[in-house]
Image (cartoon, rainbow, N blue to C red):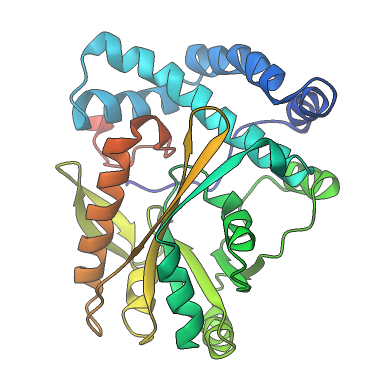
Length: 294
């Protein structure tokens, strides 16, 4: 099954080492240390290596050797986004530059006073998105719809050293109480944000074709967004060279109760981002459910 198990790699000690270098020496020194971490992942993480190699070789049609090289580069790029997130959260926001693409869509959301649904993906570095909102004085309250599956020790450590985020979290629950929280947030002209590219076992899914191959996506974000009668926006924060980030905002054309149509539009949107930023696809699992078939 093309599902994620909810577990991220890394240790608290590893994060502490990076934080030391970020604060005492600089962001680029942390990038240098990252070469050794990426090398370790490249050598020893066989399962995730196979998954991301499949992405480069079969879905992007790269050569064998280029795909191997890109596996390493993918780990390195992913590590950079984590370092950047920590650096920004510890007060080094001014070390980065930011570019806005679709600012007028966010302004329109605010003016309509309906709230809105943001749908992103595990590409780029969406976790720093609130910095973009503050830059353009869009005083939205963002509610991130999530599952409480991240490594708790790492999470607690990062919370202890970084500025408290303004983002609120709505946990997906078996009793569906999150639906009421989502509606309450929208009633207050707040934003609710989903990621639409990872589903968990036991959760309803929808099938869509990404990069020419069918994959499963969580049904929830698309079912909910297509029924709420509020604006739906696809948002991605992509890393570029020289500590620069680019926010992309695209308004979706939503037909009421047409979750399949919304998924199709989302997949097309994600695919465009992938093709522009191939190294920033950070789903290190058997996303297309194809590894056992090769």
